[in-house]
Image (tube, rainbow, N blue to C red; front, side, top):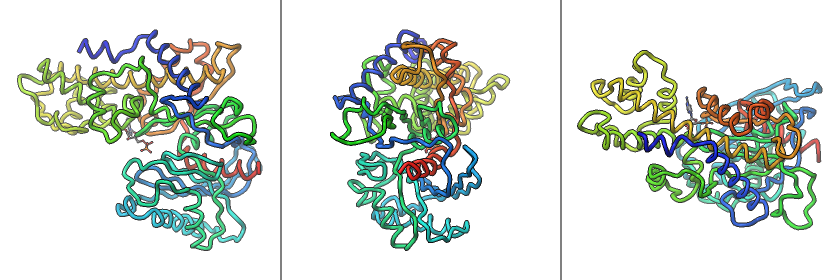
Length: 449
Ligand code: ADP
């Protein structure tokens, strides 16, 4: 346990070095040099400010579900007069069908949804398209899908322009929608945040995966096409999930976990941080403790050997367990790992809880280090002058549902920024941020055209 404590509970000076390494990687990426952070320009050089008016739609796809929404933005700044939303599960066959059918499904749902909510006009309705996959963005409303991720294995997806595909599908339904903005969930989160709050400069996803984007001075982005004309600020997608630096505390447990993933050798930061992996990292440590320190007695329960058996929500329950004699932890171990009660002594439960807290703290600490890096990079700490109030919009199940994690993140930010500067940084949870942000961006793009 002492060995794990040593490598998972990171000292302040280590976090400062991670912060500085993140800044170096980010700046190299912006210059187009080799970097673990791609720092992709989103081409989005406008963000919503609450003054947009009209009716806008959004289509949001990126995981196992997709969503369509309608918002009506009133003349009163920041007021959403009407909001309708519908979620759909993606039917299994659509993960492997030809891409055309997948986009037909999205278009069909959008058209049916709009009709159901009384939108039958022939006037063009702007749509924001949140497409949370690796895309090389070539314009606000155009991009190229780079690679398949998650469960998607559709022919015709890689290399396609998602906007064109959705627009063509919409035309097959002879509907007056126009896809005006293409974005991912982190950009949507930033847009959702900046609609409500002009101090919002960073958007973060902490869910199954993790990513961050922020408002950058366009002049600093050297990877934009020559002679391109943009406004002074543009949203940059860091793809920080792939961040790597020698200071990142990658342990043997992380290396072994990485080897079992389809993208081994990549996305180390995401694998140390996000909801998809935290439970599995904890399971591997608990297994090591069972093998090397007889945590559950002389024999190692077979159930502990099942990969991915401990989910991050279960890890969160254990880490937040305040029950008498940790009976809550024993219950989670019984429910998710099928460990018999006899094995779950108080001392075993204490050790398991300590592991879950350690894994969570490490995640929060390195996210805080990178956030401190981003804040410093955009001049939103006190290193270059007085601190200005700054909001970081955050969406994703890890941040939303794991209360103690939010506390850890705040604690490490306080440590890294100092309490006075940190007090001027608001971590704002934005619900349904990617879909709302997509509609707001559709509005911002339309009104700035
Ligand atoms: P996605 O990132 O897949 O689009 P979400 O933002 O809803 O979707 O995030 C889901 C992820 O959030 C889950 O994979 C899980 O790891 C994490 N999560 C969900 N609930 C909890 C919880 N109670 N505690 C900790 N993590 C959670």
